[in-house]
Image (cartoon, rainbow over all chains, first blue to last red; front, side):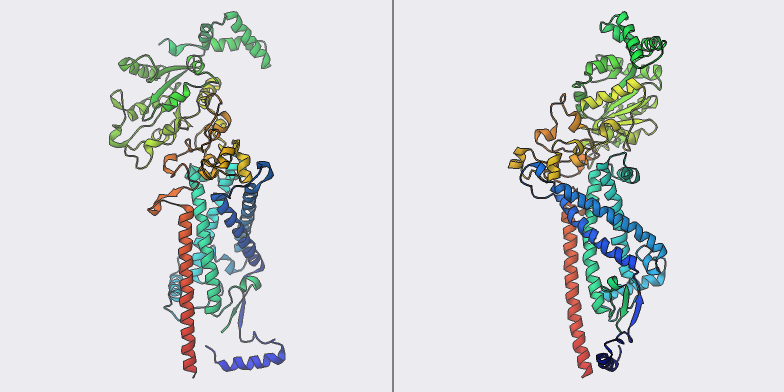
Length: 243
Length: 363
């Protein structure tokens, strides 16, 4: 912990110098490059649309009144789901591309260094931090090891699974001659009855919902507790260490 | 066995068609196909000499609903399929011969038509206890099946039993009933699933094989593409109600009377590959959804083990109690949400306590 006096001085200076030197005592690192940030928010929007429409596809809407020709509600819901699914998929592919050309932090959600012993020790440290057994968090420029682990299993793998099963289910409508079936039809070799694929795809939704809860909570909490920027970093791309 | 070597020509003559008409037919066929002048005599020659395809029809662990369906075929009539198109040499349920006489035909066909006959199997072999749960002619059915499959040209797996296992293979499957393709792995197998399959689909498959002398194109699961490449849902006449978002909510509600979509009533049309919504049943009269009941998915793998026929979402048994994906997911999300809230509360308390300590230290 820094002494409180310099801080008081700098606020006093800030009054005259229009806050230009507020960052003097803070370390700022550029972590999230523009494509990653753009992807994050487009992806988040797509997931929101997919989650809501997906839930309705699974449990259907209340019955619409009038003639069938007057309404296309379920058709639109399904269209929104498929459109958002395409956006998510294209985004995911571009994100994989960016893991190759972007900075080292861009690789974090795809490659987990499980072979490194000290990495596991740091995971343990993070678990202790979240279990209130450690007073001070360690500071990481990118994701902390526990976050990385969660990100990989609950986000990266789940989304990949959702893309594969999603396109397999989509191919049921586009037909057996479609490229979707040619690319993803093998899913039905694993589950010959597509009802099982529906069930798994549906469970995937709840993994993503659970992930979202944890993700948002952890981001806000770390922002406050670890004295480093998390939430605003996904907008500015910069991570500030406040002390 | 004279019947086994009977040609198409002899069948045509037996049906009262004169030799003169037969030759006219051959000439017309050659002309309409745009073939040369010699083709007419070649067609005639082929029909006079080509023997009908011998078919051995066996029954394992099953309920004979496939046979019941088959004999009701309207296009083509089953009498044409059985008496003219194929040479049904053995079918222990409907044949006149019985006992040793019947069993002798199997041996004879196997030797005489080695590699040329079609083995049609209704039902499946149970493998538990050495196959003793289905004894046929004094031997376990599985042995008979393996013996006849050895020299067959191809195998037709009739119905959900032979294709997937059906009710006798439903959990816990005490007899270890096993679909044909898990027992016979070295022969081409056509799956014609359904409980039972549609009559016209059955005779359609037989007609294809006898007409072209080869098997129809099969999909990934081994089903003929011409009947099983689309879902009931894709050709359902209630599909506009699905797209509009008009669903039956109760069996006796207004929506049910208006014939809305049965999606919410657990209709398995969206996950079932079959021709019911196009070919329909009983000579094209109706099919389950048209009669107001959802599809139960009888032509799909393990349809007995997918929970209630009236639920949209499948129960997941791995979680101990029967819950569907939504229930499991909501519990998981709720638990995590509660944990997060609790964690946040502890964090806040600890932080406040820490601040007070800091303040105390500062003073």
